[in-house]
Image 1 (cartoon, rainbow over the protein chains, first blue to last red):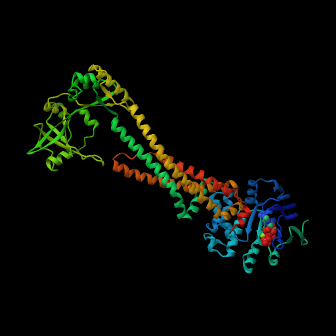
Image 2 (image 1 turned 135 degrees about the vertical axis):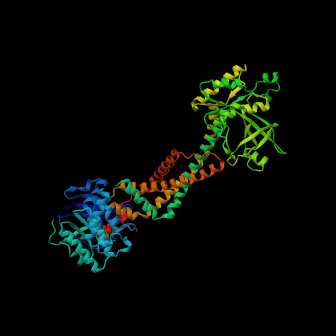
Image 3 (image 1 turned 180 degrees about the horizontal axis):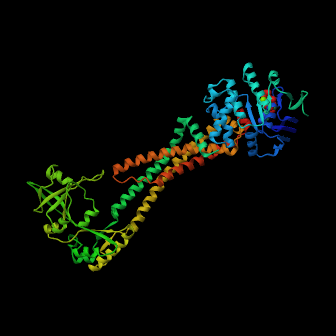
Amino acid sequence: MIQLESITRSFALGKEQIRVLNDISLTIAEGEFVAIMGPSGSGKSTLMNIIGCLDKPSSGEYYLGGENVSGYSENELARVRNQSIGFVFQQFHLLPRLTALKNVELPMIYAGVSKAERQERAEEALTKMGLRDRMDHLPNALSGGQKQRVAIARAIVNKPKLILADEPTGALDTKTSISIMEQFQELNSEGVTIVVVTHEPEVAEYANRTIMVRDGRLQSASAADGR
Amino acid sequence: MSFFENLMMALSSLKAHKMRSILTMLGIIIGVGAVIIVVAIGQGGEAMLKTQITGSGNTMEMFYQPSDEEMRANPNIFLEAPFKQEDIRALEQIPEVKRVVASSTKMSAAKFKEKSVDISSTGINKAYLQINELNVAKGRSFSAADFLGGSRVGLISNKLQEELFKGKNAVGKIILVANQPIEIIGVLEKPTGLLAFGSMEIYLPFQTWKIIYGSSDYTQVTLQAASAEQLQTAGKKAANLLNKMHNTEKSYQVINMEEIAQGIGQVTRIMTLIIGSIAGISLFVGGIGVMNIMLVSVTERTREIGIRMALGATRGQVLTQFLIESMTLTLIGGMIGILLGWGVSEVVSLFAGWPSLISWEVVVGGVLFSMVIGVVFGILPANKAAKLDPIESLRYE
Ligand SMILES: Nc1ncnc2c1ncn2[C@@H]1O[C@H](COP(=O)(O)OP(=O)(O)OP(=O)(O)O)[C@@H](O)[C@H]1O
Ligand SMILES: [Mg+2]
C-alpha cells in the first residue's frame, strides 16, 4: 500500500538546511494498522504529511498503491488526497460554520458527487459513527469525542483505502480515546489501512505494528516490520 | 464543483458577516446607483429635449424666417401669417406627409358677464386634435361637424375657467371672444409637471376662428410624417415646396434634425464623461474596498482553506471559491445599486415630468459590470488563497 524509499525532507532555515526526515524507507501493507511514535519534534507529522500527499519529499521515492506519486502534479495530489486518503487531525479541523452533515459532505463536493447522493452518503457515514441524531449540529454544539467522530465520518465518506490520523486522541480524555480507537479498529477490520501518530502507548496498542521515529530516522520497529 | 454550489457557499459566508458585507458593498451600491441615475435621467432629459424640438409622434414644426430683402419690401411682414390656405392643401399632397397640423393664434379679450380677461385664442384644424393632446376634463371635444360647419363652440383651459368662472363649471356657458359669442363645450385638463403653468387659452375650430378674426391664414404649421425616418425628407420637401410657391429662396424652413441630434449628442457625451468618471472613481474605490475585505477574509479563513485542500480541493477550486465570493459581494451591491438608482430616477422623473427611462440594457449592463468588478478586484485575494500552503494553513491559529 505505502512504500517509502530513502525519503528525506529538509527545510530551509535562513541559509541552513535542516534535515527533518533522513533516509526513511518504510513499507506498510494494505490492511495494516500502524502506530508511529517518537519524541516531540522527531518528524512524525512531517512524515505523515508526506504519506498524506500534503507535502513532497526533498528526495526519495514514494509509491502509494503501486503508483509513484513523488512526481505527481499538485492537482493530481489533490485528487489522491480526495479519493484515496482520509485525514483525522488532533484539532478535528471541522469547518465551524457548517453542520456535521455539511462537514461530512465536503470531500464529496470536491469529488463531484451529486447533491442527493452526497447527503445520503454523509448520513450513512454519520450513522455509522453513532451520530444519527447530531447531523444538523454545528461543531460548537458537539463534544470533543463527537467532533472527532464527525471528522472520522468525513475521512471515510469517499471510501479511501488509507486513513491517516495525527494524534487523533491528543485532545480527548481516556474514555473517549478508547472509543475512538475502537472505531479505528473496526474500520481496520473492514480492510482500511490505518496509520496513527501518537504519544500514548495505550493508543499504540491498538495497532498491529509500531514504528519509532527519532531525529528524523526510523529507529527500531516491532517484530512485524515488513522491511 | 458547480457554480451554483459555489454561489450558495459564497452567500452563506457573506451572511456570516452581514454588517461587514453591507459596508463593503456601499461603494459599489453608490457607484452603480449613480450610473443608473445618470443614464436614466440623461436619456429621459434627452428624450424630452428631442420631443420639444421635433415634437412627439414624428412631427416637425415649420418656420418662416423672411430674408432681409423681403423685410425691406414689406416692413409689416412679421404681422402677417405666413401660411396660406392653399399652402396647407399643397403640403397635404406630399407623399411623406401624413397630416398637416395648422393653427393660428391671436390675443384677444374674453368676456363673461362683467368680467373681461386677455386670452390667447387659437383656431385649429382637425389634424391638430390628433397630434396635440387636448385632453378634455369636462364636457366634450370638437366633432367633425364643428370643423366643417364652423360651429361657434370652444374649448377653454382650466386656468381660464378659474379666472372667468371662479372655478365653477363653465361647460354650456356662453362667453364673448373678440365680441363674438362662443359656447364653451369643454374644459381642458390642468397641465401636469412641475414647470407647467396654466395659461388662459381658448381653442376654436379654424372655420369659426376665420369668421371671428377675418383671416384665413395660419401662423403655425406642423408636419407629421408616417414614420420617424420619413420626417426629415418630408420636412425638406415641404420647405422646398413652400419656397417655390412663395417665390422665396429659403424663408420657409424646418429644423435640421441631424444637426440637433449632433448637438445633443455632444452635450450628452460631455455629461456622460464627467459623471462617468465620478462613478468610475467611486466604483474603483469600492472595488479596492472589496479587495481589502476579501484579503482579510482569506487571512481569517486560512485554516478553512487548509482543511479544504487536505480534503482534496485543488488550487483552482480554492481560487474559484474566492472569486465567486467577491463576485457575489459586488453583484448584490450592484443589484441594490440598481434598485436605488431606479427609485431615485423614478422620483426625479416624477418631479421633472418626463418619462423615466430605465431600459433593460442598463439593468443588465449594471449587473454584468458589478460582476466584472468583483472578479477584477477578487483576483488578488483569491490568488492569495489558492497559493497558501496546506500544511501551514492547517497549523494556522
Ligand atoms: N515548515 C517547516 N519549516 C522549518 N522547520 C520545520 C517545518 N515543519 C517542521 N519543522 C521542524 O521539523 C521538526 C519535526 O517536526 P514535526 O512536526 O514533524 O514533529 P513531530 O514529531 O510531529 O512533533 P510533535 O510530536 O510535537 O507533533 C521540528 O523540529 C520542526 O521544528
Ligand atoms: Mg506532530
